[in-house]
Image 1 (cartoon, helix red, strand yellow):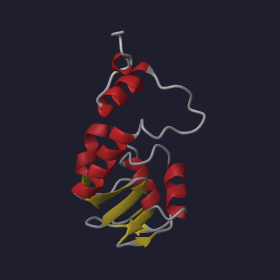
Image 2 (cartoon, rainbow, N blue to C red):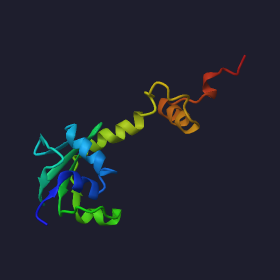
Image 3 (cartoon, rainbow, N blue to C red):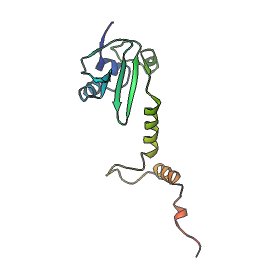
Length: 134
């Protein structure tokens, strides 16, 4: 196997849940090889670097081997290597930490865990807000 379609490979190595989602990501310009967005029908070869933008992070994967059939998660490291720069991974961590600060409209009230995380982040607790001495 010398070449495989990019959408098939992205699906096979479990970057995307379905091949349709992988194709859509290619069509929307979220998959790049050599800083050029690619179509789902583009063939890839071993040794190429594939960049996948899943906001807010752009992941980079080095193709070690080709596959066109979906595999178990334990086999994935044989087919690709994650070469994402540390700066991108820091963005992901920052987004996880600050994710509870800017909630989407219509998401409702925070859960207990989200409230505790907000209190820990702000350095206060709900009980500190009241002055019990009169």
